[in-house]
Length: 224
Image (tube, rainbow, N blue to C red):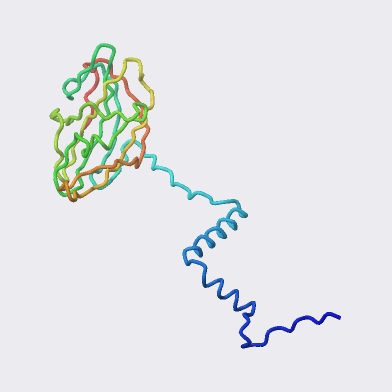
């Protein structure tokens, strides 16, 4: 008859199973623990349908006359017109083109004057979805036709933003989508200095009906 070996007595110098596990555990690099826990988390998550992406809130859909406020401007988009030409607003068209004009009121809400033109001004914050990423060709004041005006703090100004478009691209009653974009303020460091606005991000949209005023001579003067 074979006699099973006796279990080592405590303190006999032979490691017990518990001691062996403890020593083995101590040898595992600490960085492995994060990987083990991550793998376990992903396994459990997959069992419940995987990682669901966080819901992205829809962009505000404004109505004509609504005001969108960001760190630079309070913008109130009013109307859109199609006209044969509008040189007073600083835009020139070629044969086969017309002018698409968007009228809006802009109030500078920052603490110093801001340009209407340029990559850090109002021009960078307004787009027409149907015209891809094309900025306005010109910006002028509605009251005195000053082209590329600077906007003083807390002084609202009614402006005309214009694009040259192919004749037939738009017609009376068509809808366009105005896209309003917010810019972030950056402060220069190391090589650059000063403050500047950059990284436009779409913040709101608005649908406008286009009114075709033909040559414009017989159109009624808009209220403003």
